Image (cartoon, rainbow, N blue to C red; front, side):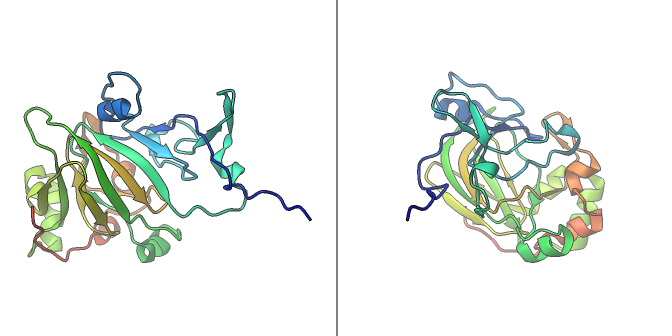
Length: 248
């Protein structure tokens, strides 16, 4: 008896899948993918084998944004990855990400918070592998990860309300990075990727985010961009306020 081949038993090839974000980047990513000298813009991420829709709110680029589409042998677009694998689950999202500016300070839900507030079985724990870096305007690449010890939720909330960016930055650990570094960012841990970082990110398959800054790279973030479907007080409760001093 012959059985149908498993939908993931053979290599799959994809159309390019660049995704709009509120920050700019992409120059190193273009070069990494062999797409010319490269330039920075508002499509700084390439989502790989994605069945996850990008959550861009009023900046949405279409109903299929973030979803990977197969490429046929003749180079023409094929079906969406989501349809090609049928009922198979793909509990991971991989992406290339390249920053020309610091991303907004943010966090993502863990699974318990996602079930309670997003009606989702997936949070957004992330792992990062640094592929390349660059200095931008004389600034070395870095990451902001986790609160420093002693940061009170009330102090963080006041800084968010005042949009005191310097105070917000000072509440997180600043870590210089170089190619080959790897990090695990559990759900609810505050973080921000600094300028000049190209990474491979492997994460849970969601695009849930709480961002506490109103402006990024010339873009004014709406309340929806910042808090998604959450009220601000619930969004602030998503952060893990347990501080830890991280070695640079």
